[in-house]
Amino acid sequence: MENQHQDCARRFAELARLVGQVQAGLDEPRVTELAASVAHIGHYLETVLFVGPVSELTAEARSQVLSANTELQREYSLLRAELSFLRVSRSQESRTQRLDRIHRHLERMGRYSTDISAWLQ
Image (cartoon, rainbow, N blue to C red; front, side, top):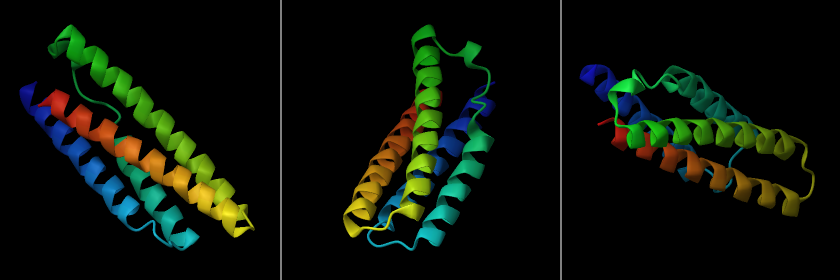
């Protein structure tokens, strides 16, 4: 079981790294590249949704992992919605607001991924 937790912890750490890379490229991204990066995060997120046998964790750690995992999925859904709106935004002001929101969603996803990785260690 411990190896499964360590493997999951590494995968969540990798997810946090991927999210950070996308975040770093947000200065003036091309929407197609951003969409591809978000899709890559989504594909990777699917591989880490199962966090292993959480019954092996303490009740507090289990609660934290499951809660953070739910929030991580929620942030990803919101990120995808913002990306959809960014694609149709015409004004620079609207695009800037969407990019700011995308940045915040990515930031929170990175934090949740890092937290889950730490709790599973």
